[in-house]
Length: 125
Image (spheres, rainbow, N blue to C red):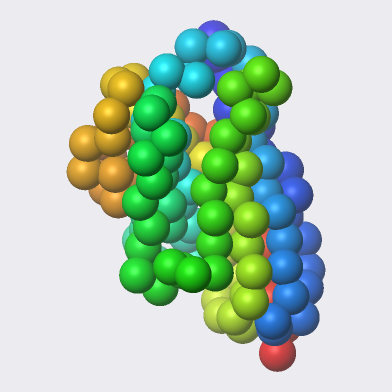
């Protein structure tokens, strides 16, 4: 079964940066809508950003101007550059895929068919 594996999480101070990666084991993912979600303890999983097979991107208002989603199809890898990180509850970040070329309701977790195991991000003040 095709897999998504996240990496790049860690601990940073407020204002710092991290780059998350999501490696796909199957090149089919290059033709899918791919998204990043985060979930803090006790909270619902929320959509952060998405990119479709054409390269069209969407972002949550809370991260616009600070986060950038991108992909390298030659490496079957999705990225999320996160700048100006804010201290908040320590969320897990997940990458996910919708088995469709264009994203449909990109911010809704239940619209995604495949998920990675998550990577922890901690931002201290």
